[in-house]
Length: 188
Image (cartoon, rainbow, N blue to C red; front, side, top):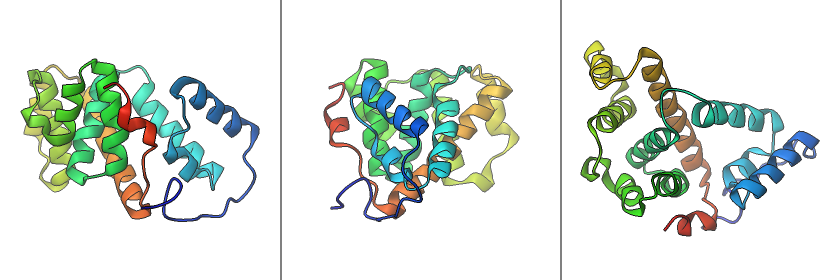
């Protein structure tokens, strides 16, 4: 098992700037911790900013997808990729946002067995197909989302969240990134 946020030891290119320190303090206040993924990226503040800017835009900004739906996409994609970090951290987020610990666990194990509505199932089927077989995506896949009530902008956001977590899952796996221990007991 690794020590610290990853099994890699990357030298910092500079001391943490004021904005990064303030961001970490905000994380500590809101979450009670600094997510290990942020600590892992802190060896290079430019990369850390790029990561956090994209994450915050995709996962927290106003859009046609609820925060829960975005977290569900993160978990479904991470389940396909078997990403321990994201399954743990975002599984906790699904438990917290839904108020349903069983849903969080079902999402981690197999979203298809969870009690989901038609809209959520269509969204997750799309995200998983994009993860497993991106070359097979067709207009009928996008139309299926429209038929479930998603706008073209929503489809863009579903694809963007799925793509982001495919990238982060691969970085986490490559670096043996481990979730903060606190995630394991959250919202249970």
